[in-house]
Length: 460
Image (tube, rainbow, N blue to C red; front, side, top):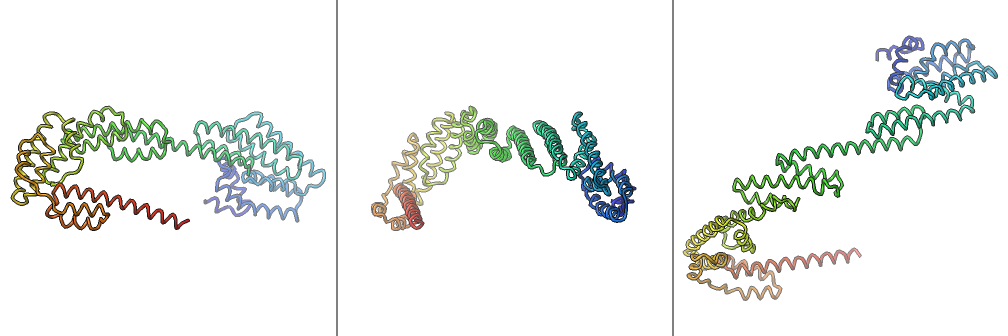
């Protein structure tokens, strides 16, 4: 910047010629060289204008001698050619053009006979010969054919290097070779395809590197049983890898399923069988063939059912329709000791609740006794309570069922509401409530279909 501020005349540029030439040799297209060239050019044109008006051939030769190195550094080849030809006419001008042309052609052919593309000095000298030959071709049209041939040869030379480095995934080097081609043949349209190929290959390489890094992290997370982070990475991997890739279809799910299996076992050791069974279920969704998960599924399901139903039987007066299935799973899959202990414990819990409920709501107690005896037929204490307590029928059942049959769901809902306090635990009331809920869902579905048909008709 200090030197740049001092450059305000041709002489000042001459004083810094060595530094400028060295900078241009290192980076001919740098911003500094470009800005200095812009600053130098009007000074040169002004001096050349004076020489054309009031000077002679000697003045032109002096200008060329003093500033040719700087003009070459700034890639002002047309201006240099103009200076060299100033005040030359006719044969003298033709001879000068021929001499300069032949000199550049000889240098170019010598360079191309001894190719050294990775030598910057070789490249810069060849570039300057091509640039000067390009400026001379405007004075002698016959030179254009040779210039085209040389440019094609050099272009192919560097594009071959670009393709080679691209295959080696050296993307910056490949871009550098394309930049070099652009200096030799500015505006070459085919370079866009090469640049796009490099850009695409770079993106693909970065994608693959990211995928491999994520695979590595995914393995670390699954081995550490960090399910949350592993799941996030799995979603990212599914976005970055084709869905048919074996990593997505088998390898990653297997690793994640193994992690779920280990976590499930940890929860089971802590007697949290509900969480353990949930983890087994999620693991099997990923890998149905996982032998560990398959072997744990039935056992943990039975133990989870024991935990869930024990809490349910402590408080509820009505039970979901799948209670029978869950009891059967306990009978079939839990250990004989745990299954027997469950039956005895639940019979005791229910019997105690029924006894307590008798004094408050005998009909509710009778309903619970009937349900309990049906669910646990081997319990003598529950059978005794069932025989002792007689369930009174719900008087409003016939009218409620008639309302449903007539499609009067609002009226049926009102009957359900009115009877809830007194008959809420009654098996007849519970059966009616489930039937009413099913009819409501059916009516809602019919209405949705009707709305869709109306909307479709409106659009048509």
